[in-house]
Amino acid sequence: MDENSGLAIRSLTGDDARGHLDAIAALRIKVFRDWPYLYEGDMDYERDYLSAYVRSRRSVFVLATDGDSVVGASTGIPLLDDTEAFRAPFATGDMDAAEVFYFGESVLLPEYRGRGLGHAFFDHREAHARSFGDYRWTAFAAVDRKADDPRKPAGHRGNDAFWAKRGYVRQPGMTMRLHWDEVGIGETGHSLTFWLRELEAAR
Image (cartoon, rainbow, N blue to C red; front, side, top):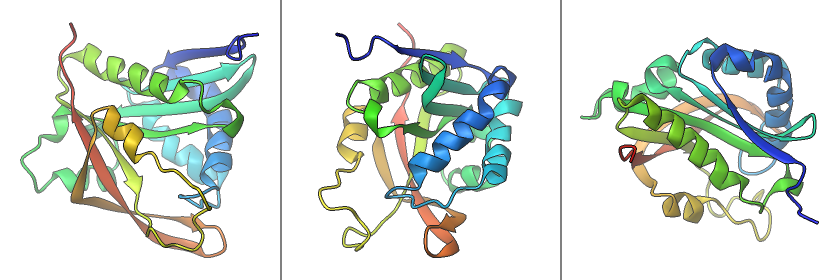
């Protein structure tokens, strides 16, 4: 039997995703509790974070569903529509923030991984950004953790190789600072480094 037979992928824009926000927020809280984010989730914080995406007319929510359940989600937004913290690393360089489409995090329940949904999330978001014709770059940011952090699970494999195969290049020194409640610690600051890819024109 096809293991993907019950799965579906669809993209929603802006306010069209409002009815799914609680499901997306709950999914983010569940997935980001694990390494490397170790996020002690909060629904009010999640609703506030996702509200920027709902307000943007050009944002995208890519949802993976199994029947009526949201099992994965990925987001994207024009960088200019995101908050100052996300725009700040671009302010001192030569890159025009108006030409950047920012990818929020992708979250997927463990039992659905390894089925190609990670690539599907990138494919849908890149196609969405490309459809406007005025974005030159796609970007995302990943939390920085020390390689020898004792909380890192044995055998953990990061996503760096996957992102590199998608054409993304890590930008050392191009970082932002965000705060969230960390499991066992409480609210603390975290550095996140940007990865960039030049977005080729639609064929």
